[in-house]
Image (cartoon, rainbow, N blue to C red; front, side, top):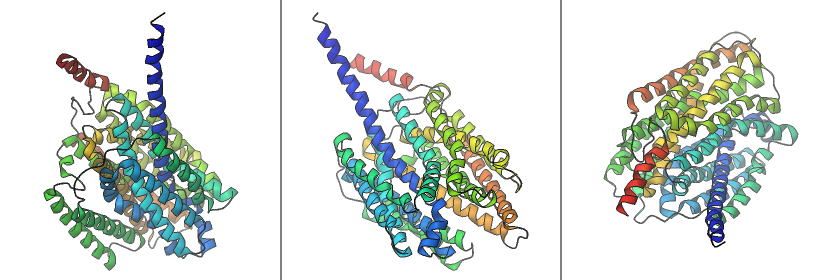
Length: 499
């Protein structure tokens, strides 16, 4: 009889812990999903936006670029802000700013207001992205718990872009393009109310803010992103683009010098001393660079060559979304059994195969014959790759550096996608300049050349993984022998021995 109460009392806290962890993870991934959605949700709505607000063809591209420029340029600064000001507070501010900017964009009456709202969304997204990943490191201990959380997080990161296409198409067809922005308002308000009640705040870091690093790093990122955007819009010989490249190189070189000497750097260079983490940073830059452009060119092909409506075009990406989701759910067990390196090699090979397959695309190919297979390969490759990369980068990071490590991760990933897309668009423009034939033929010709370049970039990622990533065991590492439990056991044994 006397044993019953302790049994009840021992299970209730465990149940509450699991429930609380699930609620924390739900809020974190919802916030990050909102960021991922808005990277593509307006893509299929661009023709309607152009008609409503009278954008020129060149000006219309800035509906996407304004968001990208602010987001990519401020990620490092936002990551460090989370360390010093508290990650929950930074995330909540980012969510509120994102929601307010979405409301302003949805109600915009002219192009200038919409572009300003999209830039403000990018600032909010920069505050959100590093904070979400850093909060996972502080709420879920290294090992299986964190791997499961990162699997869910990575699935949201992987499927956010394709869900954005589906949602954007549905809202544009059934209501208005404005709802592709307004949908963020109730979600943002709900998150801002729930975060303080559910997610615990992280300790605020002490010390001075690295002003010199913040200025040089942020300005360098802005110039670099803008230079590539300018190249994709004009050419590699554009004087303004070349000037921006020079400014970016000078500022980023200055940034490295400042960070090497700073007592509390905005991006600790010590994070790159670990060979596996450095290799993972390089890989998480290269893989999006090679494959993020697939969304752009596939969207063009589906809507212009196959003549799909925005809604139908959005649903055409569902196989890719499903492949990411199904794969990521199995990655923690695959990681425990095979380790990081085999999964990353397999994922990279699948992405290379995607580019090669799409480079053989023909105008006469229908959806099932030409696009379904590559989408399934790409979704599986993304699902296998990004969660192990996230785990490798965050393994062994101290709580004080979690925000900086997460900010660098997001910076490399986002800049990789942005710069890769700019490079692929430039290849597309070069291939189609002076080309003859129907518009569909010209589009397919340029897109296939871009897909070839994407495959080459993915090959560079594969070589980085094979040469630089070393299988290893040890506490705080993502080992190739397998399980997190196996890593945690020696620590538990030592603790008991000390006790």
